[in-house]
Amino acid sequence: MTGVAAAPAATGADKAKAKVRVVDFEFGPSKVKIRKGDKVTWVFKQGKHNVTAKGFKSGTKTSGRYSHVFKKLGTYKYRCTIHQPDMDGIVKVVR
Image (cartoon, rainbow, N blue to C red; front, side, top):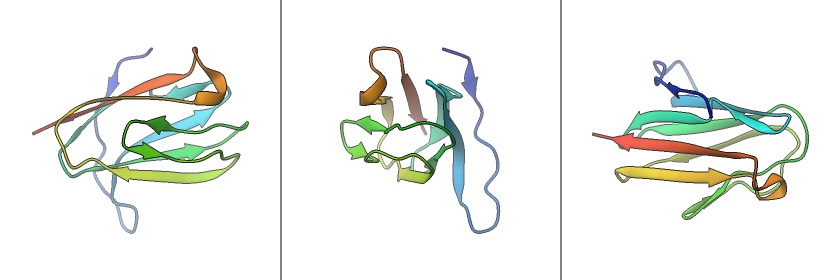
């Protein structure tokens, strides 16, 4: 896994505090840190993947986006269930 990505500033219509690319067999970045109430958007670029964790699930996608708002503090481990055990990521939600 790569380092933790800082949350970029929100822009215009997309209020996502972090964006994660879903391409090949990885999430990029694989770790993001956001604040409670922020949204993470996964952008599907290539292949057939999903984003699955306790409390949220994207369904299988080959393109497009999936977003989730994190309302509670904690560390959320997620994965692509199609490409396990090699494709996973982490969202860390802080104050």
